[in-house]
Length: 311
Ligand code: RIB
Image 1 (spheres, rainbow, N blue to C red):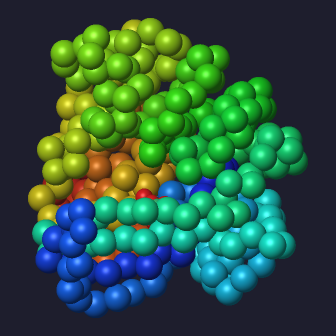
Image 2 (cartoon, protein in one colour; image 1 turned 180 degrees about the vertical axis):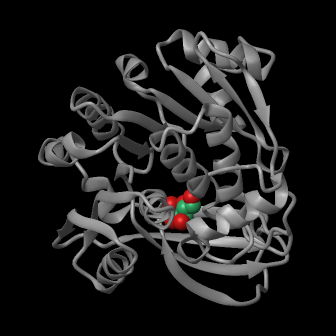
């Protein structure tokens, strides 16, 4: 069993379905409202556990109902919450999400307790890094905490993964502490500086030149591309599914990619495994409810790739 330490955010998602996202000054009459667990860190930790990894969450919630609810769901799903801090006098992170009839989501976050995850929490988590195969980060925690955590987890022998979304500037020394960087095309342009580069490949070369070992670029329904330093570059396909809500799909992809590689899957197989995880997450409404289970991923891969596709 692989072991993953996820450092990141926990939110309660407040979701409204709507025909389209409101334009400036517009009020839109939406449809159903729902509440679900979310936050990129908590989604990835939950997905890793459902994919059969030993999963730990390192993050912060407030001492309120939302925080208790998140901790309960993660614990029930087998995520180790011993390094989940409950902060007095800070609210749990909240996300307000619009999901359109086409299944696309847009998100606004109130960070709350997530903004209080500090370097000290990374030091305290050293024992978790020590015993984990990988550490997985996102950018909904303070950038300096992410930088410190990447460095420390690498020192403790973890493979390091950063899903650098939403994009924020990072100190130069961070790049060489990243084994696997996962970006969508928007984040790739942000980090590589799109004005100097014309193609995805040229932007990827720029990122790899900074010391990142492998870059995965996700391109939603088009699938994505993998660029490995000194290795092969290749594209992977998206699965053909009926999407009802894309919220959390990249989190499922990131968890799948991380778990797959920690289990020893070759890069191409891990990308396909991750792509199946992302696809399944689009088939249900809500982030936590849509994080896929291992047997569902196996079934999708079995159907799509034939019985010879071993997991
Ligand atoms: O990636 C999806 C997540 O982004 C949502 O669950 C929301 O909470 C935000 O963190």
